[in-house]
Image (cartoon, rainbow, N blue to C red; front, side, top):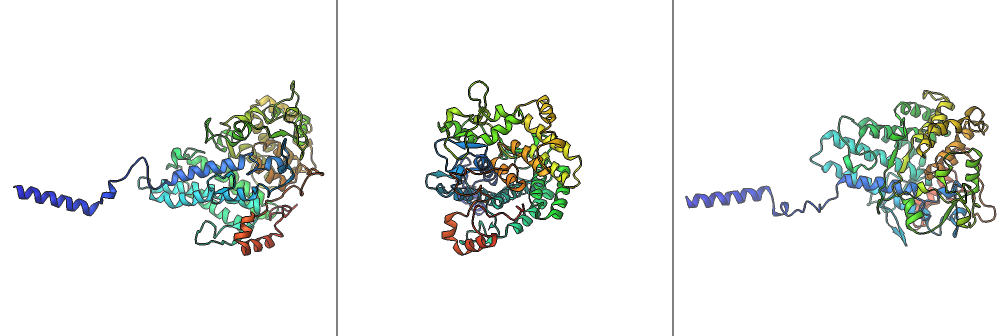
Length: 488
């Protein structure tokens, strides 16, 4: 009996050792050795939202380029000095692989995190096939958004060989070809989304895993990107717009945004620069504030603080301004929980208005979509329906009599006002629609208002041949070089 028990025990140990090793038991479930793909996805969402919404002059000067804000003590960025702070490099690295440039804290790389998330998501043995497909589709949608942002900033960029660490000197791909690829990828992601299955769950800090919301986001993004190429390829744009139009956002509640929290490090980056820093670097400029005053805009009190008794005053653009003498960014922008918008419902309605003006079949009239766009913006910034009604009734705002000679100017001017807290898109739409007519400071500007970022100096040094070829292909590595879609 004793021998039998010992034999059985030894057999059990032998059998167990064949199935598992001691390493299988030496695992701390609270400190996993491998980062879950969903966590990397959340990190990418956060980094992307922070980068396109920030006001840190090391990363995002676009509020200055479109003349919403001017500067106080330092005003190099208002005069288009990109190289001193290596702004082009910082933006590039945040979008690609992250890193650290001198004293600048660069966000984790958006595309690098998405690429790793894509590789790790299939390892989740507890997720169903449909859930994994939904998660991969969400990764693709955010990747498309990020690649488009890179193209719309630089032009030709490394794409097919990017993120392949065996390619130490990746080639640059043609910007138009990248766009074509992005539409293919976006369509595949939309088709793969299945609302009957879950997505990323709470790891998704935009939609909490709601797949119907991701479908609307993807179609709204498709609408945006299609209209960006509308002057370059009207036929393709028309087809893509008409495919997307019926499945886009229909309310402010549906827009794509990251909801920041009240405590660091997950606050809105505006709070960090406007409040936490203890600095007073920005004021509104005359260009924008005088426009708001001309239109009796109900958003002015949310956009800016008054100087004295309900007086709004803009400073000079491209010069140093006394902070106390001019209207500073509004208190709402100092809220650490202010969402970081990736794509707003107001923007979607402006895009539909433009599509209707171009003769695309999107349903509704130009004026109806234009009115909805403005109303959505006013409501988002704390106004009420009667505010929007009164604003739209003004002859200079009412679409039929609005300031501007064509739809580009009419829509473009009001879109510029509404994109106040979406600085990257404000810069993109200003370049595309050529509205409003902005001029640099004649005395201090280093160049015309940038139409693109120059390539980072590090790229010229470490990937010289490919960088030189890309520069030649786009017509020169200058801030005045127009991107392929910028035809006017």
